[in-house]
Structures are given as C-alpha cells and as structure tokens.
Length: 486
Image (tube, rainbow, N blue to C red; front, side, top):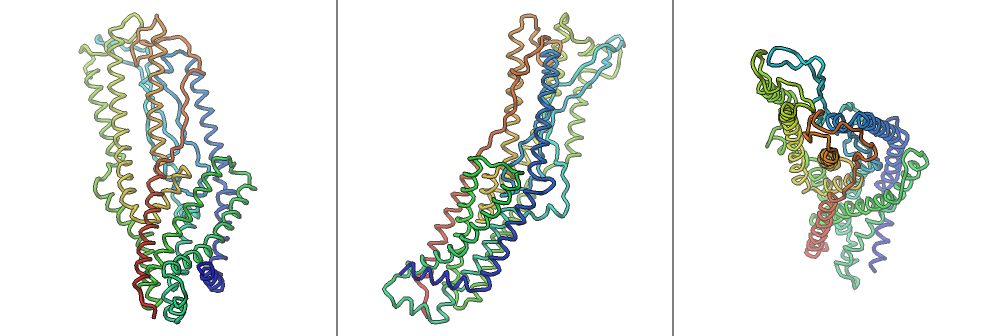
C-alpha cells in the first residue's frame, strides 16, 4: 500500500507544471555550472598553473639561498606559501575569489648602520628576519562574482521546488476529499506520510542525479579538472548531502501541509519559512556578529606596527649618532657580543610583526567561526558548510591553511637551529646571519610546505542536518496524526 500511494504521488507530480519547470531549469543550471567551471578562462587549469609556478619559484628560492649558506637561508626563509586550488570548486565555490590564495614572506633588507663614533657600516648589508604576512585577496568583486552557480546554489534551488511539491501534499487531498478516502483503507497515517515522503523524494532526487551526471560528464570531457578516487568519494558524499537537505524541506512541507486548512495558506507559510531559513536568519546573525567585535582597519594595524617598530629602533639605535648604541658594532664571527645584540634586535622585530599580523587574522577568524556557529540554525547554511568542507573551499579551508602555514614556520625554524648545531664552527646565535653556520645546505633536506585537507569541519553540519531531519520528521508525524481528514 505504501508503494501504491508513493507511485500515485510520483505520477501526480510528473503531470504538474512545477515538474516541467524543474526538469527544464535544473539541467540548464547544471550545464551552466559545468561550462563556467570547466571551460572558464579563470578555471581550475589556470589556477593550478599559477600554483605550480609559485611552487617552482619557491624551490628555486630555497636552492639559491641554501647554496649561499645556512645563515642566508635562515634570514630569507622560504618563498611565498601558495594555497592549493580547490579541485571541486564547482561544487562549492566558497567565495574563494575573496579569500587570499597565498601567504607571503616579508624580509626587509637594510644597511648603513651608524656606529658610536658616527661611522657607518657601509660594507655591512643586513637582512631582517622573515615573517608571514596575510595579505588581502587581490581578486576583484565584479558582478560576475556576486552569484555563483555552484552546487550549493542548485541545492537552494532544489529546496524551493521541494516546497512547491509538498505545500498541497496533504492539504490539497483534504480539500479534494481523497485523504479521507485513502484513510478508509487498512493503512496507518504514518505509512501515508512515509509514502508521500518517498514519492516527493523520488520526484526530486532522480532529476537531480541525472543533472549531476550531465554536469560531471561535461566537466570530465573538458579535461580541465582531473578526478581521482578521492574526488569521486567526495562527490558521492555531496550527493548524500543533497539528499539530507532535500529531505528536510520535504518534512517541513508535509508539516505545514497537514497544519493548514487549505494549500495556499500552506504555501505562504512555507515560502516565508524558506526565505527566513535560507536568507534572512543567516544574514541578520552574520551582521550581528560583525558588530560585536569590530576588526581594526588595515591602516590602523599598519600604523600600530610602524609605531612599535619605531620604538624598537629608538631603543636599539638612538638618533644621536654620538651616543653609544646597542648596535654600535656590526655582527661578525669574531664579535659574539655584537652578534647577540643584533639577534635580540631581530627577534624583537620578528615577534612584534608576527604578533600583530597573527592577532589580526586570528580576530577575523574567531569572528567568522562565531558567525558560522550561530548561522547553523539554518539547514541551508549547514548544507553550505558541509559542501564547502568536502570541497575544501571557503573560510574553514583558509583557516586550516593558516594553521598549517604557522606550523611550517615553526618547522622551518627548528630545521635551521638543528642544522646549525651540527656545525662546530658556528656561534649558534639565531637569528643573525653571521651567528649561524655559513656552510651550504642541501636543498633537498629543507622542509617543504605540504597542505593537507581536513574534513573535520564536515562532521558538525552533517550531524545538524541529520538532527533537522529527525526534528521535522517528528513534527510532521505528530501534526499529521492530529489533523482532521476533512
């Protein structure tokens, strides 16, 4: 009996105008997605080409300075740290155009330090210790980037059509008198609700699967995005996310359809709920979080950094040239005392720059994390975050990238210190070029940055999607048990 009712539901849905609209618009969106991300000028191919170029430049940089000696390599550090392009960006764009694609390395060169007698170390060229700098994205924000036709957008589109298929699933049959006729058969209300759920789910999921296959086929034939076994597994996981997301709105539609006296009222309530869950609540909560802890502007942070660095300069090198300064002598292997003073100077500058840069990014990321936690009251937002997690896009992907870059920074410094300890001729004073080993370094032993994808961020949104399904199923079940048949 359940399958009979489900087949009847499917047949009714197939003969409606809403199904015709869905079956036309869904392939158009899937094909547009494939053409944009598979054949676009700034697609994955261009991004991976730029990434490989930066990696090659980084290797050349390490080889160049490793040949000059450990001291030179210690001061210059690695080259720019690029973020690997997201292979499945077409599934969840994650607004990556507005997220920095790399972390740069800042290392200031200097010279002309004044001695206590007014002399200048014209022959001493020094290099400030390298540090990480989190520069803003240099991508534009034109109109083409405002709306991305990715799978998340298509998922929101599908949830809208789910509403159109369910708003009259029970209310319409009650008004037409077929609901009481159906219940005159030996079948429980729970089975009727399950049958209607299965009928609507099949009506929506089958065209979606066909659209996904069309999308993947076009992208695969374009040859611009390679797929491996891991990619296919993640795509299967995304299809599961589609199913969870669609299922929530089916239960929501059945709930409202069983609560109202006519189908139009149910449609109004469903549309209002859908707009609130998908757009209003996430936007308002995001705006609210942004007002809790305003992030200082880049200009203010830059001014603060310049002030603190100027204070360090005044402490180590007063402007009066006749005054004895802490940096009155150039560092050298024969002058450990002066070398240690320069090491203190470089460390103070490094710690100041690192603290200011890290603190600002951490504040931004904490604010984003709070906004994510609050906006997950919306199943649509949970669906978006889970899709971004599987695609390795969005702000969480950048947060993981930042953490790994900082871990690489510590690993690189530990390597320099460990390598320096093996040279008996070194003063072992870090971080001054003259205080470290001057011997060349095998570039193959220098640590390389390797970005690792983490899927931990997917667990919580998937758990919430499952919870939403249970909640709305329970609500729909209780509502249908109590509703009148006439």
